[in-house]
Image (cartoon, rainbow, N blue to C red; front, side):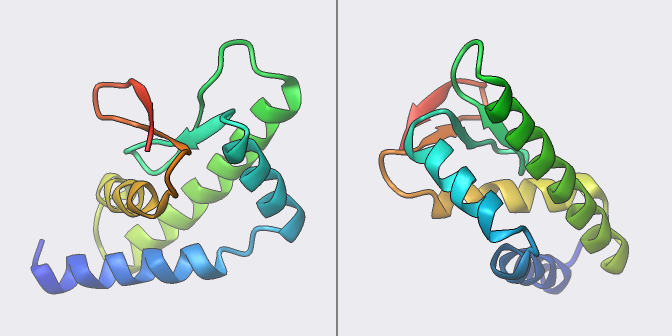
Length: 115
């Protein structure tokens, strides 16, 4: 893949992060879950549950956000004639970079750490 295509996909991911269309209520719930250390960003572009035996509302939130992310990643991949995996990896990298200190991110080996 050329650098220009990668840069274009990266720009689209940044734009989608700002305009993802997720409801304000979901965004507030997500921020609260992140702040409380219940969920964190994974390198594959998806949200993960950090704690063991999460409450059903946390699992539901993660499942719903990841479903929406997958839809967006598929759209970006189709528009840019690339794989969903490439889009997921770029999105995961960006999400982890943008995660504020004190919140959880997952390292490639699978361990959760506070950033």
